Image 1: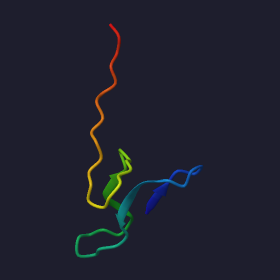
Image 2 (image 1 turned 90 degrees about the vertical axis):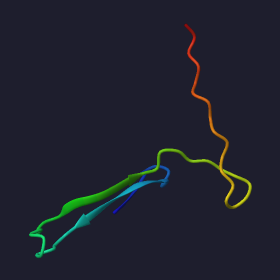
Image 3 (image 1 turned 45 degrees about the vertical axis):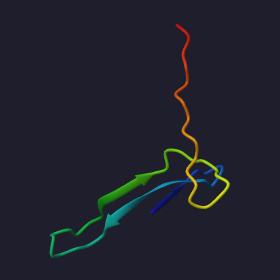
Length: 60
């Protein structure tokens, strides 16, 4: 199942389920995989890696 933001339609991640696998004894939906988009970036060319951001500084 793909998960999208309901306002921007940006892809946020996905969930994968096994719905039935009698050999394993699974007869109902069982979550077996997830992923989430944590960071997005834009680059100029295919294969190029985005510049790393430095953590935000806090004033003490």
